[in-house]
Image (tube, rainbow, N blue to C red; front, side):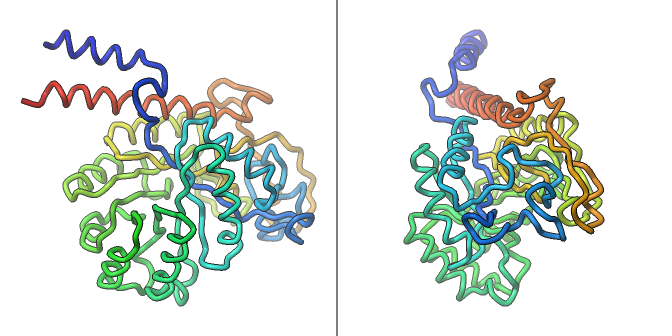
Length: 346
């Protein structure tokens, strides 16, 4: 029997990605908040904290596309193709309320994602404490549902003034799967959330994933730990905290810990949160001239050079390529577990 199980496991591992099984459930956080003068009337987000685009951006890395507009269909379609090519199945769009720039750009993202056979979810951001009320969220969830959204991730659900009783009512009426960014599994379950995720790779490292998913399984909730390549928001916000990328070792370590936790899905922080330096979107080398008075401008842009032994233009896409590797590894691990569970059952 052991030889048979080993043989079946070997056969599963030998299968190419996508053969005989669906792609592993992997989602990625995506930010549609960038703007340029040509398409949006101003540089949106690229120039925060006193930075002066296009050379001086509020990011520790410089995008290979340069400072782009999230309103540009050509850019958005190319981004969705990159995400799909990396094996990711769902794009989680940062969403700041009905009528926000992110809401107005959501149909464009959904159209481009559909063309690349990607699902689209939203991450409901905190808005402001006096805006993200139970009444506002009720209307917002209905609006999102009308647009075709079937899954929502709620960032910091317990930070504002929405009571537990209100969350229960909201989740019962949502008409979609709602997942909470929290490690308080008991509260998430009591409030009717479908699952939990972590997002923040500063606060939730590799040691958090196993206990979180164990608690989620016990509570019959989905577990969606968040992996990321690193964190460095100094040029955007002056935040001195950092999680160094270590030429890809940080990303690999988080993926290994996430897969070992046996999650229902893995979420990636992020595709293009350039301000916090968590992005895996291609980055390029850029020589910066001091153009602003911001104290953060003195730090030069970092690059992906050296990640996974890659250099120059090849390094620009290093994290996308590595993501495809880990998506395949996740799917293979899931298949092996299914086979082992089959033979372990009476």
